[in-house]
Figure 1 (spheres, helix red, strand yellow):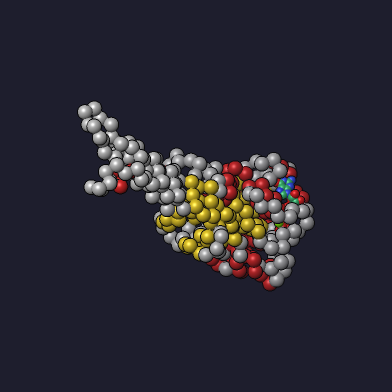
Figure 2: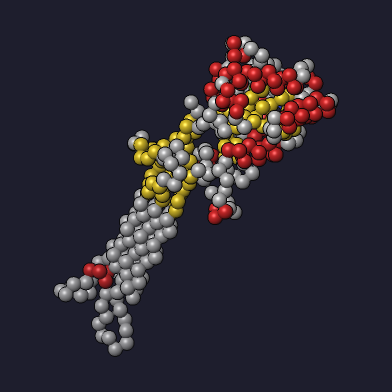
Amino acid sequence: MFIDEVTILVKAGDGGNGCLAFRREKFVPRGGPSGGDGGRGGDVTLVASEHHNTLLHFRFNPEYKAQRGRHGEGSNRKGAEGESIEVPTPVGTMVYDAATGELLHDFTKAGDRFLVAQGGRGGRGNARFATSTHQAPTEHEDGKPGDELRLRLELKLLADVGLVGFPNAGKSTLISRISAARPKIADYPFTTLEPSLGVVRSHDDRTFVVADIPGLIEGAHEGHGLGTQFLKHVERTRVLAHLVDVSESSGRDPVNDFEVVMNELASFSEDLTKKPMLVVATKMDAAQDPARVKSIEKIAKKRKMPFFKISSVTGEGIEALKKAMGEFVLAPVEPATEGRSGE
Ligand SMILES: Nc1nc2c(ncn2[C@@H]2O[C@H](COP(=O)(O)OP(=O)(O)OP(=O)(O)O)[C@@H](O)[C@H]2O)c(=O)[nH]1
Ligand SMILES: [Mg+2]
């Protein structure tokens, strides 16, 4: 199981201080107390968001502070309340108190809200302490501090995109190009022995998870090569990217490679072949024979699968592929939130 984990600090706003003041007016010899209350500090609320699939955004911004309340002022003016903030959190995130290890909240559905740090109350101004026998109070309170705590967030990562293909097709190289994952890459089959996940940042700053799994060969479902048991890691992905080496160095026919892998997927589970699939011709920088590329492009067209040509060496086609993956797996942005950036 792959677990994304991050520690963040949340700090609610402190309450504003109460004010000590007396009225001074012309012709009023003894003005009464007029110190206003401090404003309440803002809260920090975590909100489950379907636009976030990973905890990556927390790594760039590990601190969330709400605004403090303003201090009270004379003439019984209450301080303004501090602004509260909302922090988007992926559905599925478990929120722990980092100090005690206590589970505070488990986000199960989008829109779910959890007030994690409450703003401090504003202090009372001296006007509030006046009584009939105590007409010139000088008591006034400081605001209460807002809650501050460290949270440990945990999210079980499920892959959104699965990379499949022959050994040496360039799966690990692609994931190392589009994510921070650094699986072993080498010029021999079965370099990858177990699946690994990479978190990919899309062009609009959202993230999704790509799984790199070991290569498949003919008869994998009968145990040849590394077998097919790791295909369970891509069973729940939303889309498969099928990588086909179109360079001469594979020494094989790309169309045949494609069919072999499709057969192995089908032998593992029919559902896998029903999943949307992107066909990706890899190693374009080393593809001398355009006929090889064309042949696989034709197969993709026939099956109505989107087709991409990439080179992880030159970067050709990588952005377009990333964008297409993102379109398959990320919820469409609603018009109301469009243009929002930097979350
Ligand atoms: N010229 C060229 N070579 C590439 C490209 N992508 C990968 N390679 C090379 O192809 C070989 C295999 O790459 P990997 O990424 O390890 O392939 P894989 O699909 O993960 O292989 P397995 O883990 O064995 O299934 C390595 O020597 C890479 O350097 C590319 O775009 N162009
Ligand atoms: Mg590999």
